[in-house]
Image (cartoon, rainbow, N blue to C red; front, side, top):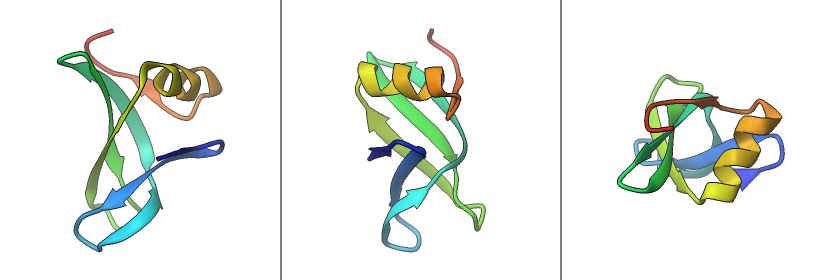
Amino acid sequence: MATTNGITAYSVKTKTKNVPMIDPVIDIKSGRYIATGTDAAGNKMAAIMGKAAAEEHIANGNAKKGSGW
């Protein structure tokens, strides 16, 4: 789900894989790291990732910290 240049996720609405997420925010909910954002068409998307991937995306500037930190 995560690539070196940003966070990608599956778009349920368009049924396509590896869609880049625009302005992702990573929250911690129930011990899980969840990146939420939108795709280019404005559809809401979410991706669940591990702690290491979440911290890497925040350190690289690909995402912002949300609630739960």
